[in-house]
Length: 207
Image (cartoon, rainbow, N blue to C red):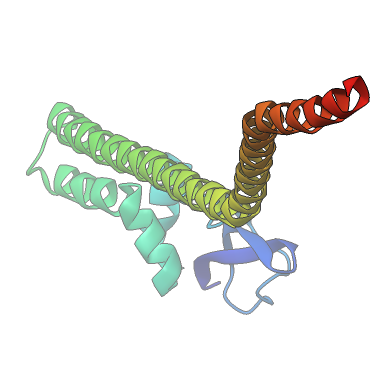
């Protein structure tokens, strides 16, 4: 029976995830399978991949053929590397200790690379968030300035009206003061004139 290692779709529309399965090559894509070997979720960043390495290697040794996508995933998780190393062990080119040593060294480097990628993604997210906050702050500052400028004409008009009122009041006070001074200047002369008019009249009465 020809066996394929392939992806079986699950999840809801628009957000699928996949099981990595060993299945009869003649079976439907999402039909029955012989063994579930792992999962692949492309909805996360980076994608979530879990694979049973030893069982996957066993299926490869038994002649199972992975599809292109499954092959890329198995390679990413080191399944193909371990399959290759075990081939060297069967031929006597490597010992079990060497196989484990080489595979573990590869895993360590892979984990470092994945950790660096995750760290880079976290930094990129933080930078993007900081940039968004800065842009929002600038927009708010521009809005505040525009609002302040819009209020300036009203304030200026109020100040102008108040200044005009003060000028008018000062002018009125000056006019009143001038009138008072004029009256004060004319009052003695008027009194003298009255006294002069009164004097001849008194003289006439005495005669």
